[in-house]
Length: 390
Image (cartoon, rainbow, N blue to C red; front, side, top):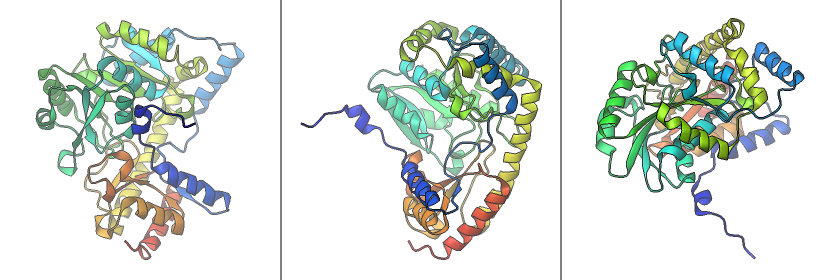
């Protein structure tokens, strides 16, 4: 007897890079030295003061549920962080601590999107954004973007693609997979465009802190009614702790709290206590050193790949990715990635994971390895290009 599963589950695409990752792990198990540039996870372990705070929380018996909105002390610490870093006063009551940035996205999409309605999303963009919308029977209106738009939505694109089913727009700054950052003026323009349509602006600020030669503006500097998704995973280096947050307009908080109570009860208690150490001067000094290391990696890998013939039209200002056009080499991006994995044991991600617009001719490199490993990767890629046959 065959078992029927939901249509929504079937419609959610897998991460295509996972097939490559599985093969990379097989090659590693067979003794091959694989350089991993495919997964968006920093290579640094969680900073020692954060780990110590988590251990102290366990020793003190902090293992019970917290309130659905999170520890008051952590929400206050996040609010203070916005005051210090962005000059923005955020009431801690507007902050909900969530199980990763994904938990924040789940809350925001569940609150704002009815079945059959949609958000506007940049294509290319982070794939889970559209998959979460499908999960709640909403939709993603993918908007093709490219170098001329710096791979971001613009007020003009909002006007062009907005229709009767639109209820909002989700943008990311810095963006995955392109690393581009929206300026304060650009955020203000998007806020005004979405407001004119009567919609909601949702901004993914998960890669804030990981910017190079500039600081990213928060949308809250220009729009106090925007929804902000953020995470302790990237800048704070707590990927496996699964902790994030959502900042919402005051009127939305009761509904979001109700959703949180039902969807996950509360975020990890131990992770929340550990995260209190994120904002200590000692921890922030460590994180800033890591930001400098990422900047050095970008500054090595970007010109090195361009010299090999990869077309990276827009210099990324944040995150830890390079989004490269492989048209000069010909062929399909997935097969291109597979070639380098099998022949040179370098793993990177095909554009298919990030949308549909010109996806088959783009790949993403994550510079989440140290410079010595990146140098080895470039040498192997140069060698692999000589044997690539589209």
